[in-house]
Length: 158
Image (cartoon, rainbow, N blue to C red):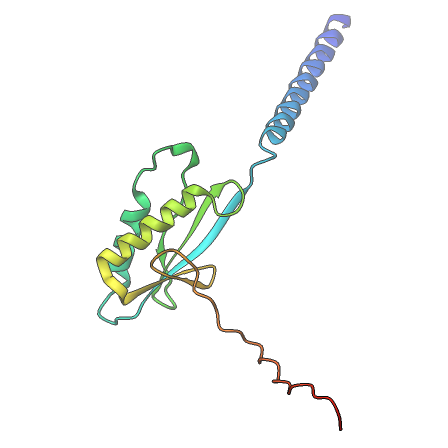
């Protein structure tokens, strides 16, 4: 009886030790990855030309996104799909880091180049709702607020 009790207690101790080790390992992993964040940008490719199908755009986007990066550990990942409601190709680029990482910028530039080569100016690329130009810069949105009324010159006297 005494031997059985000792065996149960030792198995409980082993179970507790394995749980503690698991928790410590998880805490160390979380602490080691604390300075890196997952960032993501939503993209949408729209066609200006009705002759261009969403399947054609999806083919170019998929080929562009599937190219291997120089360093696989810092690559941006994405899966493109066709939005059934609008017929546009949508995808999200995600990577570890802060802000727009180098891998996201490189993938974005490669995608813009491939879209321009395949379709010219007949497609548009949007990032988080803002249109991207061919050089990768964001097209400024028109101001929605009305400009302040022009004030006359301040004069002296009556």
